[in-house]
Each structure stands twice: as C-alpha cells, then as structure tokens.
Length: 145
Image (tube, rainbow, N blue to C red; front, side, top):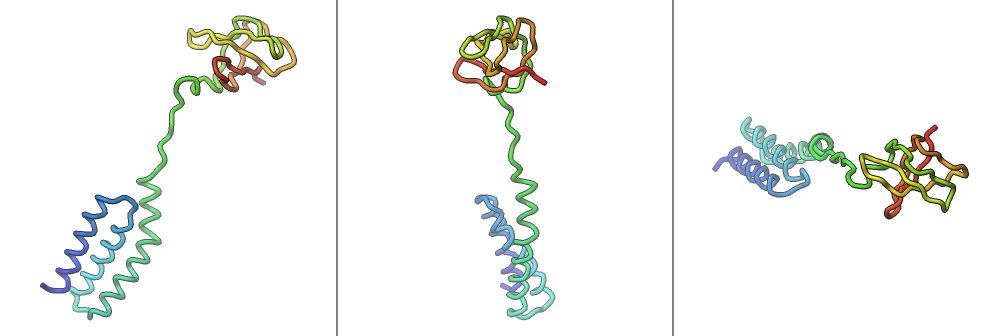
C-alpha cells in the first residue's frame, strides 16, 4: 500500500468517525490527511508529509472549526409558550386594579387573569396595560408609556 493510499484511508476513517462524534475535531485531521495524501502523491518525503499534516491541522483548527461552529451549531431561537408568552403583551383591564395589595382582573386571549400592579395609582377598566411578569396565578401589570 502506498503512502497516498494510507493517508486517504486515514482521511475516510476520520470523516466517518467525525459523523459519529460531535465537536468538529476529527474532521480537521481528516482535511489534514487529505493534504498529506496530496503531498505524498506529488512525491514528498515522509517528513514533508508529516509537516504538511501538522500545518494543515493547525490551520484547519484555526479556520474551519470556528466557521463550522458558527454555521452548524447556531443556538435555536426559543419561542415562549404558556404563561411565558404573556410577558410583554398588551391587554385590557376588565376589573379595576388598585395599588398593592388590591387585585383586579385583565383579559388576555379570552382568559381572565388576576392582576396586580406596583403603581401607586388605581388602573381603571378599559385601560391598556402591559404584562410585566407572572407570579403563580397572578399577572403583574404596568401602564405602558
């Protein structure tokens, strides 16, 4: 078996192992193995092949790995659901909300929620408010500016 064939087999095995393991580490060595195979194909000595392998490995780690992490490992955008989806929404007051600890009510998507405010003034029926937080079964609201 010739040197280029051994480097190609190493590259294929490393690419297959990369598919089975996360992290984009083995793919860098596989790329370096392809470069060393190319050097061997052009008749470079074993020392030159190893030097090409090391240099391309380092360059691959510095260039390809960060690029793959940016493109393939993007964090998924989460969509708030349940009560978390209420935060930031504008809703209408259905029962007056007095300053703490007096509770009132708001309507959000056909559901009626207990509501409280930290504001020192009373919020009247029909006022549009923004939901700031959800604490147990009570929403904390504020009058938007």
